[in-house]
Each structure stands twice: as C-alpha cells, then as structure tokens.
Length: 113
Image (cartoon, rainbow, N blue to C red; front, side):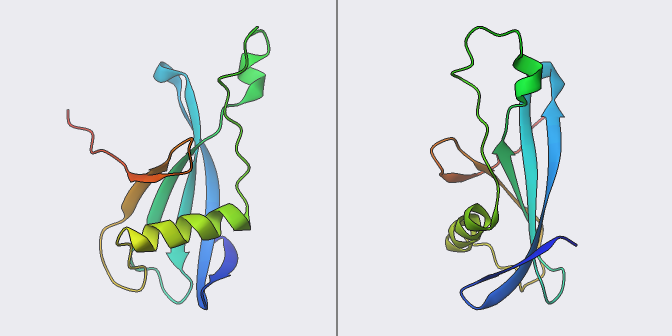
C-alpha cells in the first residue's frame, strides 16, 4: 500500500484518494497512513481540495482550497497525529482527523443519524 516515508526513524506508507461530498459541494482527499511494518492502527485524514474544473464559471474563486499533498505535509500530519495519540504500531481502531485550512489537525466529529 502506498508510498514509503520515514519520519523520526519510523517507516510509514501513505496513499491519497479523491472524495467528493456532492450534496454539500465540498471536495476533499483522504490521506491514509499506516506503519510500514504491519497494518495496525491506521490514520485517515481528510484534506480539503476543491476541484477548479467544477468552478470554471465562478466569478469569485477566492474561497477555493487547492492544497498540495506531498511527503513534507504527510510528515507534519504524522507528527501532529502522534502528538494527538495515534499509535500506529499498536492494534486499534482507525483514527480519523480533518486537516483544517489553518493546518491544524482536529478529530473528525462522529456523525450521528
């Protein structure tokens, strides 16, 4: 699974998938990170990324977010997630976060029906 990345001497694998929440008009990418040794507790991070092609006719594009996701950003997300309690080498449920526009990592609120 995914691209290799080493952060603070620990090896990880990460991948990125596009997602779209059509009813709300939001677009985001799902960043998945796991410990490279074995899949234990996975990390899922929603990263907002608006598709400019969906807004071709819009006059005001100032609200669009087009964030590049590469090894540098992934390394920062890993460090923040570890500080917030992610333990990739242990078994446990997948932790889900949102990377806010101001680069804060916040837990994804559980959606209740």
